[in-house]
Length: 304
Image (cartoon, rainbow, N blue to C red; front, side, top):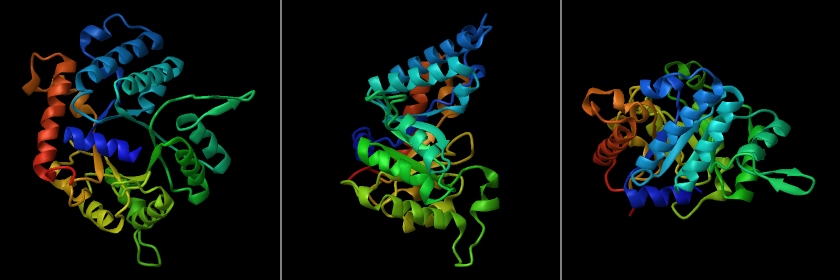
């Protein structure tokens, strides 16, 4: 699946991932008017997402759907999450389910089947969610990751493992040094490289990627050098303070190696003065085009 994502990045010359981290409060006032239940709120969120997907699907390769924003609306929110994932796939977008799942092996196996594979009922294999990729937490170790790596091999899917996250306090643990002299985030990165070793595709990147924040360029540059086969999901651009100049260290000499997430900067672009008068979907499209130009200027041509 990483090869398919890279194919689309090269085709569009755009490594942007639109984060559909859609809170009800992000919706325009006219969409929120009269809503009084989770079911109504979730339906409006789905409508909002679909309209944005329609406007951006020809200019970006991927979307990331953060499940916490949907769980907040209960059962109706989970339906909205699923409907959003399915609609994005209908529009030929690569879909990342941002769920950061993991647990002990048996529970991790259930998560892997839920988001990447299928669940058997009386001999019939059924899909719960149809995402292409899933974010996972690798800090439980190898036995918590193996169910996911087994599933991606069977289903042509990918995972992104938390390595160096974009939040300000990530260094409290991730930047502690081990007795070996390695930082914890470096050791996690080395594990990610090992976990994906036998899934490397035509571009030299494996199906086991890493989450590496744009807000920590020194660590990101270090990881890019040490993890030549690991593709990065890069959060932190825009509202969190990451810039194209900060994150360009995540990419290789061919302008490949990562996809850059932007959530509020795109789905809430209509609130910015430069998009004054634009409806939210048109503003999202213009924000995606502006982001593509910004990233291209920093990274250069994508692909050989």
